[in-house]
Image (cartoon, rainbow, N blue to C red; front, top):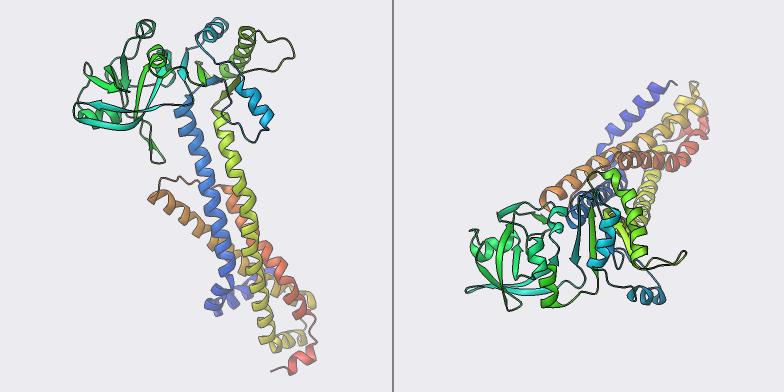
Length: 413
C-alpha cells in the first residue's frame, strides 16, 4: 500500500466521522491551545518588560550603581544583614565615578527606597499619595525626558537647595487642567514648591502611570524627607557597546571610593536593565515549570481518548480488515493504515489547537493590557505534541488490527 493511499484512506475515515473525530480530539485541541496561548502571553510579557518597563525605569544604554541589588532573590538572613550594613551612596561616590568615566553622557544621583508619597495641593485641588523623589539634574537626561512646559532642574537648584520642582503630566492635567503651570506653586509635604517644568506624558505600563510624580533637586528632597535607605547612581553611555567596559571602570572607581582591599567583596551593586528583566524571567520560569505538567495531563487524556476511539474503529472495521488481508494486504499495510489515521487525527488536533491558541492570545492582547507574542518554537512543539500523541496512542490499536486472523475477521459481523 502506497503512502499516498494510506493518507487518503485516513482522511476519508476522518471525514466520514467528523463529529466523532472532533470530540476525539477535544483534549488535544484544548491542551495545545492552552500551551500556545500561555507561552505567547509569557513571551509577550518578557519582551514588554525588556522594551518598555526596564528601559522606562532605568533608561537605555544605562547602568545603575545601587546600594542594594534590584533582584535580591532568596538570600539568607546573614547575607541580608550584611547588605543592610552597606554604606549609602552619595555625591562623593558620583565624583569618583565621573572621574573614571569622562566619556559618559550623563551621571546622576536619585533618591531610592523608600520612595515617599505625599499629598500635592494646588488651590482647592488635592492629589493624594503622589510619588516624590529627588534627583541631580543629569537624571532628566538619562531618562530622556521631553518637556511639555518650562525647563529642567539645574545644578544651581541643587547647589542652592531651591524649593522648585518638575512635575509629571498627570499632575499638570489633574491639578491645572492641562494648562501651563510653570511659575505657579504647589504644596508638597506641606511645603510650597515652585513649578519650573512639566514633563510630556510617558504613558502607562499595564495600567500603571509613569506620569504621576513630583521631582525635586536631591538636596531639597533630603531636607524635606531625609536621606533614603538606598540611593542610586545612574550612568548613561552614548552607545550600547560602551556599557559593559564602563561598568568595569565604575566598579574599580567605587572600590577605590569605598577603600575596599583586594579580595574584599563589593559593598555596592552595579546592574543594567537586564537585572530587572532577569528578575522577571525568574518569576515566569515558575510558570514554565508548571505548564508542561498541566499540558501533559491534557495530552495524556486526549491520547487515551484517541486510543479508545481507534480500538472502536478496529472493531467496527474488522470485516474490512479481513477482506483486505484475504486479497493480499500484509500486516505492515494494516499497521501503517491505522497508525496513519491515529497520527492524522492527533496532528489535525494539534493544528486546530495551535490556531486556536494563536487566536486566543491575539484576543487577550486586544482586550487587555497584557501583550502576547506567538513564538515559532511553541507552534512547532504544539504540532510535534499532536503527532507524538498519535504515534504513542495509535500503536496499540494499529498492532491489534494488524494481528487479526483474516478468516476470523472475515466471519465477524
